[in-house]
Structures are given as structure tokens and as C-alpha cells.
Image (cartoon, rainbow, N blue to C red):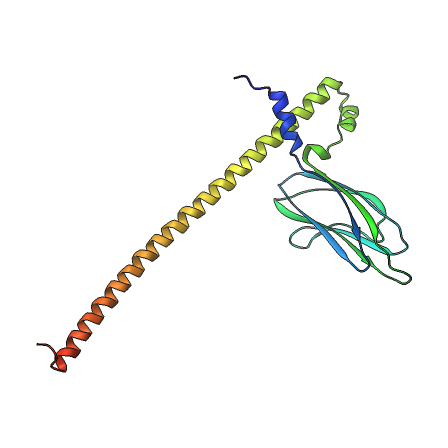
Length: 204
């Protein structure tokens, strides 16, 4: 059976993460979006916060609390950063009421990473690429991303298998140790009761 590689790549591209959400943010409220992203991946974000006279702050941090992007009184803008290692990143919006009638506001957030975050029009202009060459570059980056994802999943599977094998060995050794302890305890009880009954002259 023949496989259409181009169709396969497009199918996989569909599952590359490009989060686009909108939500309502109340007064004195904080909402966050968390995302796990691999190492050396470009991440871009675009946001827009409905203006209702109240202040809304935006912060982007990693799992260690390092601030990758921060914007006070955020209304509309973009941010970008490149991950240095595999980590969980958090994008948070926080509102503060300074007076007046508190109202909910609508927040739009679009997150892209990997090839979805690259601007191939700028790459084409910088390197003077033809449309076909740009498409080939895009497919090359896509295939590399898919290969990297498979390699990462295989590494995680190996780590999980090693953990399972280690846990199985420990459980087995603990079970053997528990059985030996129970056998030793049972033997000691039999000998102790035998001596006790002999001392009481209940048995010969």
C-alpha cells in the first residue's frame, strides 16, 4: 500500500499546537494557560484585551518563576521567546480594580510554536527563495519537527520502561523479603510456643 507522504505531513501538521482561545476575565481575577514545550522551540503569542477602564497585566513565566515576558496594563500586542530546555510555561492575565464599576472583559490569546511560529514570508524575502523553495523549507521543518517529536516520545517511553522495570524489581525484592520475614516470624512463634507449653508441662 502506497503512502502519500505529503498528505501525512499535512495530517501531522494539523496536530502541531497552535492554541487560539478567548475567555472572559472578571474583576480582581487571574487566569493562566499552561503549556509544555520542548527545547530550542520558538514560541510566539498574540493577545488582545478588551478595554473597560480597568488594568490588566500579562506575564509569561517558566516553571522556575523566570519572567520571559511582562506587560502592565496590557491591551494588545505580541511576544516571542525561544525555549532553552523542555519545560512548562505559563501565560497569565491578572486584573486589578482601581475604582468604578467592575466589569468582565473579553481576552483573546493565540499561541504558536515550532513551524507554526515561523514567518516564512520573511524567510523568503531574506534568503530570496522561490515559492516552491519556501514550501520545501516548510515541509523540511515540519518533517524535522515530527522526527524530533517521535524521538522525544521514544525517549520518554524508554524512561518509563526503565522506571517500570526498576519498580517491578523493587516490588519483587520487597515481596521476597516480606515472605522471609513472615516465615522467620512464624518459625519463632512456633518455637516460642513449644518452649512455653513445655515449661507449663502442657506437652512433653
